[in-house]
Length: 456
Image 1 (cartoon, rainbow, N blue to C red):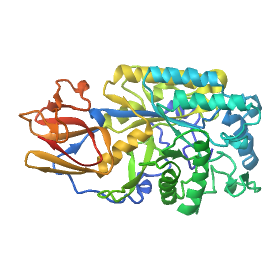
Image 2: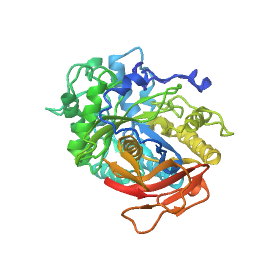
Image 3: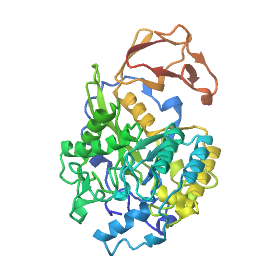
Image 4: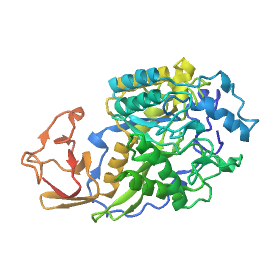
């Protein structure tokens, strides 16, 4: 799609260049207003959860039943007739629930977690909380229930704006009549919009998913949406997710990098971190292009770009070695690949290689990654005589720290009667456990919101 967004994927040439840079913005542009930060915690280092590297999978362009590529391509072609010439009539109109079940059950069996979009009004076909013309009300409800029960436990559900194609007039519920890139969500409409204007639009999308029985803590941008209105997008995500779902730590997916830039999440607009009403928004950053099946399900990818057979080459080992979240990015039509399931087989191969070569990873949803990074960056930590005091704006499971020195007695959380259990092997590290690591000590525990203390 738009050359200035992550939707532009190099075709066959990309498959020959695992390190090809797909980053269209520098990280400095993404930083924006980080907001408040606590003072440095001296010699205490907050590690990754359980001292492992988070991995995740972002699935874009997914929704109930509708194959967004089939319905979206002719709408893109209306604005860009020389760029979108795919044979869309030959693509299936539906990605069936039988495939959703097959995919979701395999991922659950192998521990795969991530984000799964639900486009509220996919390509203007219909509304997830009302009707999808071409499918019965019963078929829509069965599809929604499948996502609620099978996918939602392990996947964050995001709106990907309202239609992923034409902009909706939220006052009428109908697309604007203009047919130009400035009235397409993927391209120019968001440029110059205020945070309030974007909040209204995002909230409209979120309310549709709420009506459809979903709970959302974040949003995904379609194409170039928000790429030239980043501060407004971040603030709108924060406001809309809190307004509609009372989300404690809203997050959003807008960018990916495949070069050497950091892909660590960005905790932005932090405020009130020492008080009763803290807030922030987290930008989640992908680390791969769509090397599965493309956004239209027409260009096969390659598992080798993600991770080679020996587990050493490819993009994922590079990011894992840096200790940053290795978050893959794909598109639902490419995973289904018009019934051939080529993208799904590439994912399966990559996951099995990943599990075989790396035992220091932990699958997490985007909301779980966002929560951990918010707690990691915003918790006030102070070491005093025989104790470590925490002032945490947000609770966080598996909070893991490293302190200098070797403890002579088992540590314990002040509010807990039982001490943490000492372990000998790193892979045993979990909440309520600690271990000696050279001349340091690593401790893992569930960090409560507010004040708490670790007695050492």
